[in-house]
Length: 316
Figure 1 (cartoon, rainbow, N blue to C red):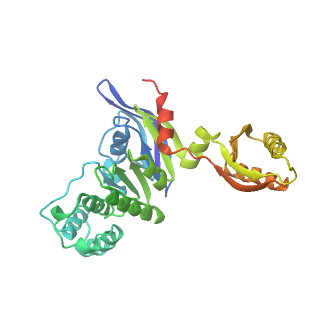
Figure 2: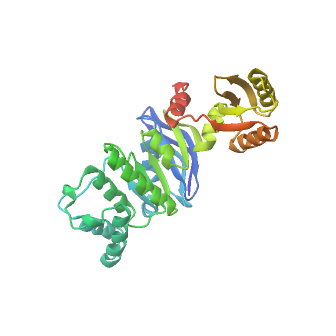
Figure 3: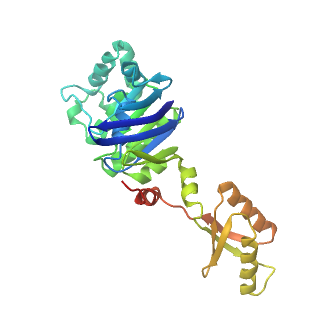
């Protein structure tokens, strides 16, 4: 769906994007993670045909965004971080106005808008003036407006900025529903745990560079593959508890991807570099050796800690 190669953007001497390469498959919900000034918004605006690149190539569903920006605007729906609404319009009039900008007939717009307003939970607000809506409602309305022409790609720049917890939850549900419908979505946010919940893949940016990208689970495993397994187990073949621990320790250390085993009062902490399938195989081996396992899970690193660790070593 989106192919970016060697994308560079300069503002005078300032390098906003530095040789960016990114590929997003159709149906992905891709999350851009990074601090202000990392290059997320610049990338999004170039993808949407709103900003010229210094060099590189950008293709959206096979169309060159740099040479055919008008064609791209029909393929992309864009929700900026600072959105504009027309306060003297009612919600349905607002949708009709944007539909007319794409040359759509009023009857078609009304039919499509009804469905979109239902999708964003604003069906009961269609005859309400836009300026009476809460910020969260306005933000969801902007998502509906961005979908009026049925774009292939939906781009949202900080859609949860300034929203209260309830409004953030409602926006998250809208985006999950769009993902379930097969829409390709790019979303940037500083609310990192929410990105982890919503996105199928993420890209971490810092100072114009894409440091790492891929499936959330793959990035977690790649950067924190040794996050310990917590195993609470019993060894019925050994009456002495210490002997049982020694047996369990020896057995674990013989297994592939196990580098270290330590014990707390109640469980074993196992440094394990394998993926989820390999963790399942390890559990199977323990059971086959008559180890009774009552608790077995891998300690998970949250996305925010991952971001801080990855970007912490980046130099200018």
